[in-house]
Length: 173
Image (cartoon, rainbow, N blue to C red; front, side, top):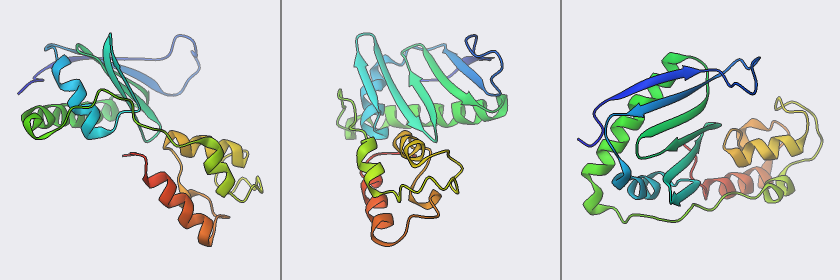
């Protein structure tokens, strides 16, 4: 087992004191530097850096960055959600480490969907039925992994299928 323990720190953003969500830092008691390229390969990190080492994932609209000694997460609703995600990450880190001999490590950042490609497929009615102010904002949220073809009531037929196929090329959990 590579990662055994951590200390959790929950806080509100200092630059946005009125924010309703929290940030979480898990300070790791073990150095997990060696697992980062394997996690990047397994989870399709949106950003990988080797110096200083880190891998960032965008999952359900949350940014999660894993460093050798810390995990940073944003947009947490509460401490319970943060703990649930941290426990999932701990299991994933340890499972990936155990299987590393069967995983080709990746030192590259994953490709990302392009905003313009998503926007081309949307109806561009700015109807707000999806909960976003405009189709441009919807496209940005789709690129982030927060929205997909099912979230646009106006999107039908071939364009719905094309958007689903396009977004499925990128790893969103």
